[in-house]
Image (cartoon, rainbow, N blue to C red; front, top):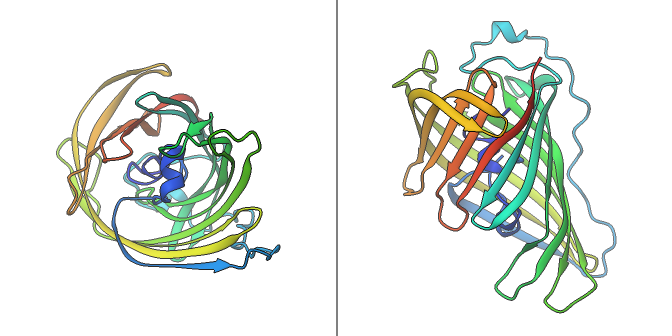
Length: 291
């Protein structure tokens, strides 16, 4: 499971993913932050070949044992898996899963590699009532072992758009690659009162395509996030009852808040509530497989 500031934060509802890719998954997969630069390069409509970002290869085994890496969170094992349900108001039915498929090295970091899968029921994408159907997102997320922050991801998604009144949809595909560099110090352990800050610079490239047009979007986002741990308490969910630390997160310059509940027993976030304007949502673990 990715760190409480990365993967769940990244995997907003499909509606948000259509508007802008946030950092990181579920859910698949980005984060709030100011946009420093962005460019869009359109491709002529008669172009039939779209250049996609390179695919990640099968994760190689990390030569640095997990036991030698100081980690704020419990160590993860290959084959462990978490499935989440996400809902926002009346928008329900989004499901995403994260499965540990390997460990590797990315840059100077020892990392876990997780496979992401996101599915969603049909949802409205604009004020005219247009629908998106057959939503699917897959990919790999690389998390450094020290704090499980996402340092790299490679994601692909597809869906069909139906304008109001249309019976034939327009297929859309997207390939997304990002790299995030973090600076900051971690506390000695996850305990009541622990507090820290992490600054991040996030760069991304998105290749998108419709049947008659395609393009490339690149950008860089920056943010500084503060974390504060509160006392552990029971959290009752469909998947069971978990004793979890509440961790409150706040981005510098933003009034939005995020609360996550991390369970050492589940080795993962078991609940996240985000109050960000425009895409407030809740994610809760529904099933998990530990080894």
